[in-house]
Length: 400
Image (cartoon, rainbow, N blue to C red; front, side, top):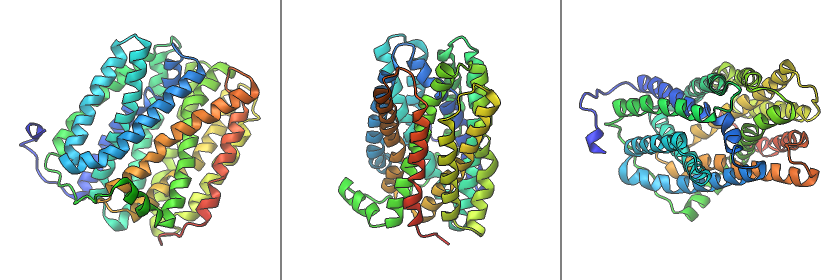
């Protein structure tokens, strides 16, 4: 990848690089989210809901493997090169999703792109961690998360407009593919002289011991797994439920999703500042999970197909989720070194693990209720699982 080094590159200040990474993260998230909420409906063109669950579980397995291998590759070739090659591979995979029609090929491409998405995310985390000053972790992470989550607000609306009620799911991958070219250029333009930290090398067994010796990390990882299960289930099954069970069209679903996601860019930055300056992470984390869990349980009892009602309750669930997410991110990155890629990779493994658990929840409820559609009981179960995060959080020691 040496040939990709930019000869016009000039060193920049850390704060400038933080803002640059935020812009790169915004574009990366657009490519991720534009097709995300219609992925399950796209797979539904050639698979039933039980098979869709298994496809997501396969994607999770490959992603876990990628997270375990990535730290070793990053140590060998460097974070910049891994980021560049990951984006190039993602371009090829999305091109396949746009052009291929075979269910077997599409399933394979879909599974592989979920893993590559995670590798790119890991590389961006390393870039950001290297350029973040220790005293401002909450502020920087809050700003970064708010910027990324602005994409989460915009992208579902773009996706629903592209679909336009006609099942044009392939076109969402065209839009996502277009995002990858500026992403590739910005990484190439800004990081060819990136100096990798002296990464810590740990075997899998050493890594488990390394993390398990920090009781706060163990509790935080458990809470993050629960949060990621909430996200995974909502991402895969909530749009199906709104479309097939509640009868909303994709235009209405797009509006609901946009309103639902507003809390992320709205509250995460100020909460990051508050965590740095005043309250610490624990209290805000507890309140976030409590609000998220209780409001999700309420969804299990909503029978009225009213756009405003669903948007309001889902909006409340995301106020809680946004608060919990930024506190988990802030706490972890205050306590981890940029050299510790293995621990960072293990922290991010909670995301693909959630894509094992969420489909199992859906399959279990489908089996118990003897239905072919997503049952309202899922919301109650997801809400109760979310409330379980309160137990490990109460044992976490604040960083300030």
